[in-house]
Structures are given as C-alpha cells and as structure tokens.
Image 1 (cartoon, rainbow, N blue to C red):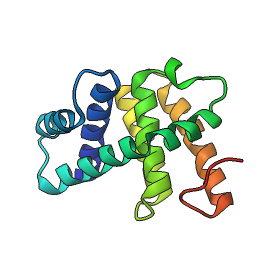
Image 2 (image 1 turned 45 degrees about the horizontal axis):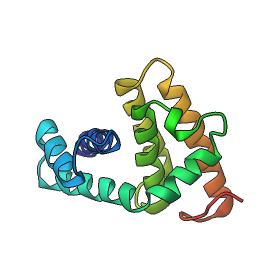
Image 3 (image 1 turned 60 degrees about the horizontal axis):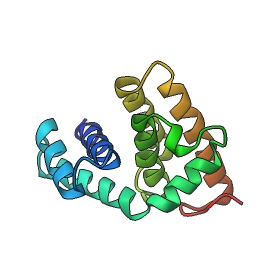
Image 4 (image 1 turned 60 degrees about the vertical axis):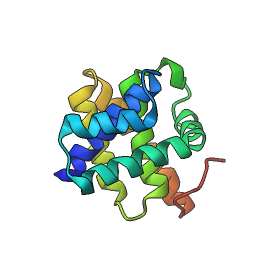
Length: 143
C-alpha cells in the first residue's frame, strides 16, 4: 500500500513538472507531503521521478512507438505521465514485476484519468511489455 501511495505522489510530481509549474525537487517534496509518506515511500518517489526524468527521452520514444495515432503532446497530461512512470519501471526496475507496474498504472488511470484512460494506458503498456518480453531485456528499444 505504501508503494501505491508513493506512485500517486510520483504521478503528482511528474504532472506538475510536465506542466512546467515547479522544479522537480519542489514537486517531489510537495507531493510527498501531500500524500503523507514516510521516508521509505519518499525515497521510492524520488527514485521514480528521478528515473523518469533521467530516461525521459528513451521512455517517450518507446511510448510514441507504441501509440502512433497519439503524439505525446496530444495525450492527456495525466495519461502521459502514468505511462512514463510505468514504462520507467518496465525498463529500469527489474525488481518490480511487470504485471505489478501495469496494474498499478491502470489503477492510477482509473483514479486520476478520464473514463477511457485505464483502457488506453493498459493497451499501450501491454504492447510495450510484450515487446520487452520478446527482447528478453529491460532496456531494449523497438526496432
């Protein structure tokens, strides 16, 4: 449950950063305080947000390659950042089962997105996960 709340905080921080309203460190601090996380949860938020920001180009390219009808800029901000968060986990967190990353993303989409967000997020993440399983790697890119 703490990791679920940490993912919510990470999403809130990424949302604010994406809109350009705040610096990453302040966005993380505010989100952690808003959600009321202990230090372990706050550390997970920092890892997630830092990882997404560090690998954002790679993550965005992968998302775009599996959503050709939807440019990233046209996606709802919440959907785009849920996808970024989950794709970071799929690519760079082998300690987190892929099914957990996808399920958590779908739950975030149900809670924070519109009525179609969970299906949209699940569809793209399912394609990416199948691709990565076919590659046998956590850091593979589509051909």
